[in-house]
Length: 291
Image (cartoon, rainbow, N blue to C red):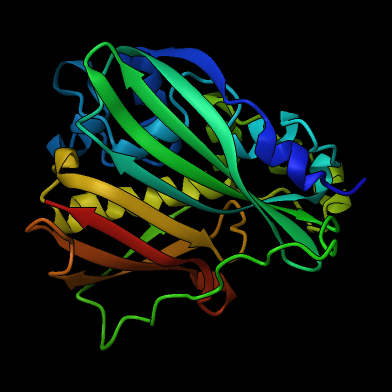
């Protein structure tokens, strides 16, 4: 069934209360591969409750509910098969450091519906705030294959120029064979990441890693490598999911420093590829703005 663009855009914002505790933060970090080596003080900041810091991308799973890529499917005017849904990209702006324990109000609304021809692209914006004010803003870009072609606005298509010159730093991060099964415990139970039969229905040989897991792994690599392990320096982070990652692969994370971060800060351009597939791009157009 085609997407009803007008109904989706006119749908009222939906508000929900979310809460999290230190163990939720620890689980998220472990699901990204934190804690290796387990006695490294730099890793203990992600795993030990008395020194716990919160990687800003935790915002994408805070509250343990369905991620934006799933929540958008309950929007009026959106009646599609989950097997046709792909997470196309994610942006996050952090208004202040995330607490290790918190309760917040999160408000979702569809801000755009674009006709990409062979697919529809929906943009779901989420604003989260607690008693002290705004915490974060995020946007999930969700493709629905086979639901385009109604003659609507194609939306912006410009992409940033690729970084110039060799990267300032390159690191590799192994993805565990059971990484997707562990990451599912943060709230995203999409069977695409666990059920081989469902993955084949969706057009993949086997279950794939969550795009937001790759997204978090890349941010952690930037924080640990170029930001002195200081999670509070991250201001914003955006990336496009260029292709899937399969559990068991190795991610190569390339990073380029830039002074263009706005308000006196800097930025890091990031590109992530799958080593075993001839460096096939999996995360592209990624930028981390920082203080």
